[in-house]
Image (cartoon, rainbow, N blue to C red):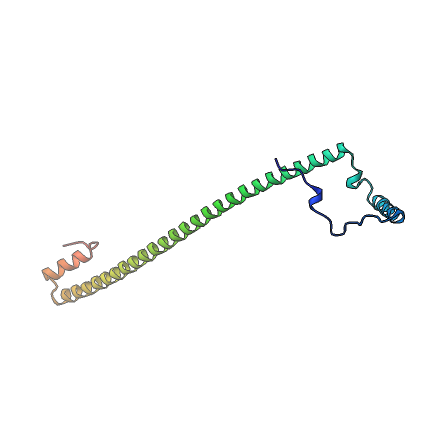
Length: 161
């Protein structure tokens, strides 16, 4: 537990001077009465009873304990927040890496697809050229065996004689 508050260690900069005579003393008392009238329910430190002073110290110690408790909770909260932020940043970085990897794989797949599409186009063009050549041969030789078999292989839907 913390030490009790020592009110004498913190002198107020506007502390009143000690009265030098009865007139000063009367003025000081009048100022204190006016201050009490302006702030009802508040007493000066020298007007507190021992019980009230003890209660004030208890309240001050309870307030300090509560402040310590709140400080510890705030520190714990800050540590947890830092931990969560660090984990979130790590997860964000991992997600960015996964996205980059997926994008790379997509680009690779697109390039492979485009290459296969070009190869398919080339194959279809070659087949078209071979068909045309087979047709040209068939015209030259109506009963030519090789040209007829080539056309039959390229056009399986046509009946064979």
